[in-house]
Amino acid sequence: MSILLPDVALTELSSTHVALDWVGMEGIDLPIMLDEPGFTYPVQARAEARVDLPDPTIKGIHMSRLYRLLDAFSDAERLSPVALARLLRAMVDSHADCHSRRARLGLSFSLLCRRPALLTEGLSGWKAYPARIEATWGDGQLSLEASVQVGYSSTCPCSAALTRQLIEQAFSEAFAASGPVDVAEVAAWLRANATLATPHSQRSVADVRVRLDDGARSLGLLTLVERIEAALGTPLQTAVKRADEQAFARLNGQNLMYVEDAARRLRQAIDGLYPDSSVSVRHVESLHPHDAVASSSQSGVSAFSEDGARTAIDPVRGGADQGVRFQG
Image 1 (cartoon, rainbow, N blue to C red):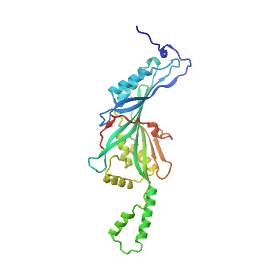
Image 2: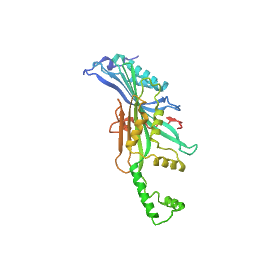
Image 3: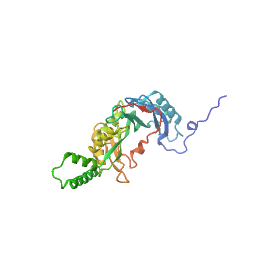
Image 4: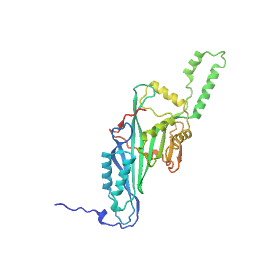
């Protein structure tokens, strides 16, 4: 004998008549397939799904409907603007009895890419780029924002100048009484003394958020990562041999930057490519116990919060099948 189960969301009215901007769920784990070059396996994502509840008399939304739509989406779709528009429209349609008109979806995940060494042929390793997609559907239109986080190395220009001065002074003292200087003797002195002082450098983080064009056909996450790394010039390395480490040291020495330099390079690299954008950079200082930060925004996308965009991106960690082979 079947028993009709109660559903108070349908049979009861709200006792407090207040419309709600958003109602839904956070922290939903699911696999998603990225519509990016080289990604043939799903990545582990964490989702937030919401719809509006404009009718103040309705008791509650149907969260299981949102969950089932997400589950079906992860099984059948690749993550693209067109697929996201279909999903969000379906979320709104599933709550017609709640008079919902808008839907929002947030997805946090990592782009796990295989990166080649700078010089050593055939040597590569994995690097993860935390990413986040925020999609909103309302008035029959899709609004999309994408965020990526990219690590790089930064060497302080002031510290480099002070280091060069110390080496210059030591060289002058060592050879002040000499007549003509022998090249081999100078080379030997440099091998022994060129590191009597070294400039400070540190691992650094760039967070970039962009609003995609309304007619965008792809999210272009890897393209954005590539543009960021090219602008900064010193991307973090994975597997290295000594030749690669030396090449990385050369890159850092020829690419000195303050946090202001990094932010301006990124601003220049993405300006004009997106309707709105925001950049935030953080140099995790090796000289100080505090970090150096800079940010800049264009048009409607504000700079990241003081807490840092790493919190906003909140990448999902783990997942055995989130790899992709991507050279570049």
